[in-house]
Length: 501
Image (cartoon, rainbow, N blue to C red):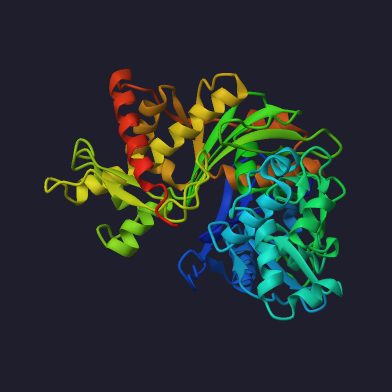
């Protein structure tokens, strides 16, 4: 790979798609980004146009190459990271999706989840998959599509319909038809056995999903490659697709959390905290998910505990798009800075229920504690603080499940630019919060996975050596105040529960 200059990372997220070129030092050479539409056909339903995502992906790859004055020939490998549970079903022969992709936030499968839980039992599913029975995951979404999209059930029985999370959809389109996913994305479907890393026949029967629909499961960093990009594709050359990681596992990898007990939190549309727990899965007793952290080639899989929050940055977008009290997401910090505190209000952003540690699809968003004193500055501050409170609940659950402390929290994602949030987060946790010098850790993790598979980087140590701290926040709040604020938060959460019958 001595003649190759770059690793290309495709970061396909909930609201946009990015392509980033990294050099051997792990530094960004060029980046391109393009947003896609959010589709809300019914209350609780959230969809994307899979073809729009594919087209945007191809466009940003070409834009990133152009910005670096590079060609596909100078790219050693491609890594993909993606919004995870989002579900696409398409025709094996034509490559055409049968319907819009159903997004991880979508709650339409509540009835199916209830039926599955009663049929084979949530304890069984947790033991097999590490996951609770929830609308979050892909398997129930596929089951819903098979029941509700005309002709899809027959196509699946005939072997014509295939399923994939967004990584598999992109691999298919980049390589000209390879149907492959990685262990981290497969572990988010509620269809994979967490210990054997293979599709589980009993779960497939329970959800009435034919095995023929499912992609092959491969390591996250795969020396045998997922395939090569086609010459007529966006790279204009045959480049190995060698690494795939779900977005939060990619951030764990990009943050070099390779030792047991290391943790990171990503602040994006949602909020996702992961902790490396080593080579043996630990089932959570406190409302967390057990997931595959990563797998490199023939090495053993490394597992992680994860706490997932549905609404973090999306709450700021709601202030911007629905209420109009800010003109840009970045403006929320300035508005929040006009007040010293939230004025006693709490925003519980349960727009699509609450994920970890509650897993309550019957919850809905509330603003609690309103008085005539409150103005938009307090609302902006409460929106920022809501993310920190939710993270504190994940943190508390994680250290109880893992039975080990988290001494620092590495952070990344779009919201880490918000310094008010970062300081409040450190205060609420009582530990330092550290932002890396390169904050695009999700894309960087995918790049490292692909680069290690192809020899561009020698091993995980090369990635760890590249990691540098950018800024650190230390707690300054007294414990008594921290505890009082959390008590108010928990009271507000209790008021949001049971809203939907």
